Image (cartoon, rainbow over all chains, first blue to last red; front, side):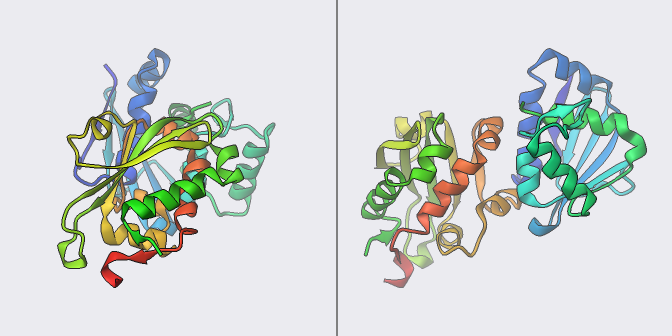
Length: 136
Length: 142
């Protein structure tokens, strides 16, 4: 059964925020099933807030760490306001939809490198994570 | 000039909220109360945790009160609780600390339904910006 575990419950920063979003997401059976199938590691970095968070997906559990996971399959770097708004960007096939103004603005940030994504060959993991975090 | 964090300061803050067209638009569908906790720092003149409750509804503040403490039913039943030591709040009010970054860094703690907070991030930002518009005197500077 899908679950989300905070590696350091005392930290209470971005790790707790992401854990809160993911925990709410897996209340939906389809998203719980998606988390069950996920495997891999993701680091999310927010340079302007000087915060990094690691997500480790394995065996139906997402473990959320208050630091980067060395050698993560995927590393996503974005400004704090972009990250907070990310969940409200409509998705198409698990990626921000360029058919919407918010999706186009995000894509522009990728093209101008204010959002950096490495590990794009793990596209399935990226689209699954985007879908889990999506609120629209 | 009201002293932060006093009842008078809270009243001024509520006036700012109810006079803000920007907040009314950003929080037009928001329904729920929240509690700000200004955690004690005796060396700065804040001897006890201060609980400020705001009943926010569709872009307006319907009611507000300074609560007795965490056992107050309003504190227990609040939809959201945002806590930080007094000096962190002072930094927010003085625009020295961005509240979003503060939350991500764990300097400001948020309790409540995260998806709702994320959906209303613009409203939250406006709300925090309004604290910076209150003419404020800080208790440790009085």
